Length: 303
Ligand SMILES: NC(=O)c1ccc[n+]([C@@H]2O[C@H](COP(=O)([O-])OP(=O)(O)OC[C@H]3O[C@@H](n4cnc5c(N)ncnc54)[C@H](OP(=O)(O)O)[C@@H]3O)[C@@H](O)[C@H]2O)c1
Image (cartoon, rainbow, N blue to C red):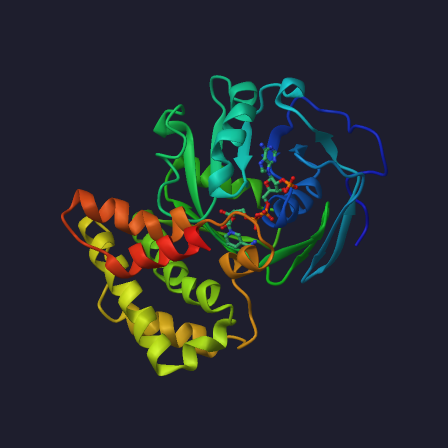
């Protein structure tokens, strides 16, 4: 695919352009960055920790390649119309330093992260400017600035004016933005899938481990705790979700490696707090014990 962002230096900013800053240039940041850069109506800046010259994203629709405008420290940042956070959940404090420079009156902030705590993770932002986003875009980084996007995927946001404005950013891309009246349930449904994935990180076996009946029972138990706490938090999750999650893992490629498994294999920090310990923490608020998720979190933290 052509380099629609131009071949080099900074792009000229037209007054009618929407300014977008993307914090984090890993799998998700680079993927959405590549698509948004390709839209001439958007003026995109990448806020990186690890710099690179060329952005190369192998998408389902072909290669997107560009020379992005890239900042490497919050001191270089200026206010924008949209700030999009794509760091891992545990890097929220670093993202917050960028937000201090990027946010002005009228700036909207989209949080593209796993978990159900998008709003509380950034308490310094007033909730009315934050758009929480459930991410379903499978993508992997192969090198700084180089990513493989496996599916076009989707981003789910609350219905309303802010959700509409977020969807407009992706109007020229094949990434679907879904608007929902019940974002809480969407986020908890994703958490139900993610919390069960910890069995792969613990056994160091990919998704096919769900075919083991004992492991499948354990996964259902992890999900049932998520369902109970999610319901107490207001999510509408049926009992069937536990079986559906196991079936989902069984139906996918048996060799697929989820991100917490990949992080553990690579010796990186994991999102265990956002994927499992959160169920324990929020359960305490409602007097609901979540011993399986507690054990899983303790084992990952101790390993
Ligand atoms: N990848 C997927 O398929 C997928 C799917 C669904 C949901 N998600 C969720 O989406 C979120 C992002 O995941 P990801 O896979 O994109 O993670 P990732 O590949 O690890 O990328 C995170 C990026 O954040 C950057 N970063 C960290 N601290 C920073 C800071 N202070 N300033 C600037 N950049 C900083 C990292 O910098 P470095 O380049 O220096 O490492 C990295 O580029 C996570 O919550 C994940 O669970 C991911």
